[in-house]
Length: 324
Image 1 (cartoon, rainbow, N blue to C red):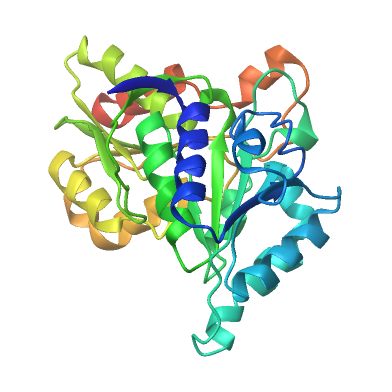
Image 2: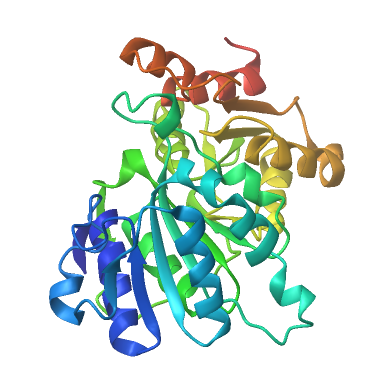
C-alpha cells in the first residue's frame, strides 16, 4: 500500500473518478493552480474542458453546478475555504438540499462541494470556521469529514458517485498527515463510522481533526489504566448512530470532541446518548469543543480556544474518575 497524505489521497480519488466517468468535471476557485493541492496535475492530465477556474462568485458557480448536476453532469466544485459556503448559502441550503425532494425524485443532484475547514496557523476569524454544523440540519445534503488518507480517498470517491449533494469538508490541520492507502479500487460507504481504537473504559467520539486528538489522548490515558475507544464518525449526515450507541453501551462513558462551535456534533451525539443509552451511562457526558467566539488571530489565543489532545484527555479523566 502507498503511504501518502490526505491531500494526495483526494487528488488520486478525483483523478480516478475523472478517468472512470466522462461526466465528472472539476471547477472552482483556483483549481488549475490548486492552492491546497487536491487538484494538482489534473489540468495537465484532463485539460481545461474538465478542469477549470470559476469566476470568484461562489453563489454563481455553485448555482451553475446544481443546474449541471440536474442535467447529467457530476460536478466536483472546490470552494477552497469552508467559510465561503456562507456566500452560497441559498444555493446549498435552500436549493441543493431540497430540489430532489421537491421534484419527487425526478431530478438527481450528483454534486460534490469541497472546502477546507478548521483553524491552523493564525488564519483568523473569517478563514478558520468549521461550518459543517449548519449543514447537519439541511435535510437532503450529505456531510463528510475524513481524518485519514484512506478515508479521504474512499469517502471522496463515494461522494462523487452519490446522486445526492455532498459537502466534503477537508480538515485543514490534517492535510499533510500521511497514512496507508490501498492500491486497489475501494469505496468507503457514506454513513458508516469507524472504530479507530478499541477500548472498554470510555468512548471518545470525534471527527476530522479531533480524531487525531482523541487518539493522542487515548495513548496518554492508556498509561494511566484508562482504555479509551475512539469512534470516528467520518460522516456527520448521515450519522452512524448505531456505532456510537454500541460503543457507549459497552464503556458506559462518553466524551465528544468537535472543532466546531456548538450546537454541532458534540450536542447531537450527547442527545443521542441521553435518549437511547441513558440507562448505561455511568457519568455525565463530557464535551470538548470550540467556545462560541470567533477564532482569534493571535497564536496563543487560537490555541487556547481550540480543542486539543490535552483537553480531550482531561475530559475523559473527568468522566472516569472525577480528575480535572
